[in-house]
Image (cartoon, rainbow, N blue to C red; front, side):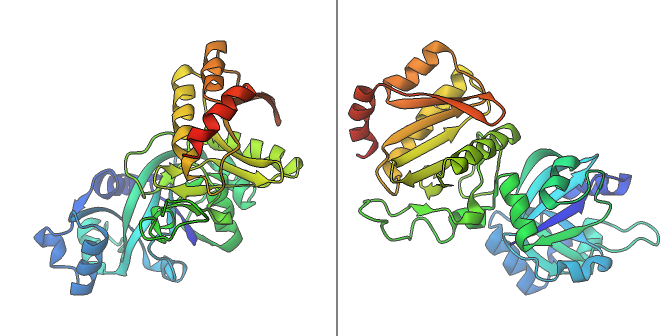
Length: 341
């Protein structure tokens, strides 16, 4: 897995390119683009983008060495104005100067963006450079003046810190084709690998596509995971037809599913409750506890709502310190039969 960091909004030229090929999709079957593509390139695009259109970005010849090995499913962070503005997932990648110059006509004496790549998906983001530098291990003032390609530990660090799951990881091996796990009658459950331990946006419309977290939620999950580790508990995650769980803890004390929200308002409480009840039947091991995690205490009536369905309420009381309000045992015992149905 590679992570590209691509300056894309710092000049009038790149802002224009953003408007032309990132802010909107390009119909690559249109004659002026299709005739510039080789047969193999057009076939690759059609396989990844059967609708016939895609968003595109590119790289100049000075980045040829860096772009070697970049492929489908890699992640690109589009930067500008001192932050990551968007996160994309790489689709088809190929060298084609003629197509590049039609997509992005070079300025006088300008360089062609001859390495072209499509994007399987693009999600808005707002990640300050300071946070990105911290994840990579750079000095806080680094401002990412040129394109970078991160690999191995640095790439994993960025993906884990900002809770990004490319759609290719989420959907492959295909969830529809996997054999049953344990004694579950479900075919579509798998434990997330270590590098997939990231969370997601609160809402997203296309399943098995790029998932990018709400930054406040990801910080909360990261903070709570540290407390779990301090307690000697390891949190992982699992994929199922309903989505991707936030935290999944199973040890000698039992199995707990935890769903985090960036806000303790009533709508967020309802959403956490719905997701927990949706995920619970897919738990690789039968869930003993369900917990909803919030940055501050929900209203009394919302805690009662969670407890009514046997769900514990966890909220932060100080940095790195959390408090749990457990559901009544009789409610949890009654609901556990439904969780495991």
